[in-house]
Image (cartoon, rainbow, N blue to C red):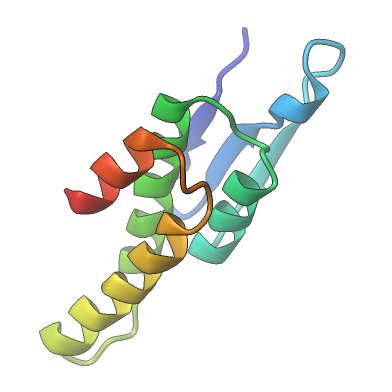
Length: 100
């Protein structure tokens, strides 16, 4: 059975939808930048899935943050959310996720 996206704790795995329906290829991403790249490259498609991928990418950034205080942490996550907002500018669920 296929899964579209899966949280692994310190990484995110996605079904590379560019190869469907002929191949089932999964890719694993360990950083928010890699997840953002996967969204841009259309590895994952569909507004709900894109929103979930962005949320997981932001969670990766938060979990791997080395900010020394809350202000640094907030600024870092704002920068990460800005990066995600530019990955697929027409994806409504993406912006819904970022705002929350």
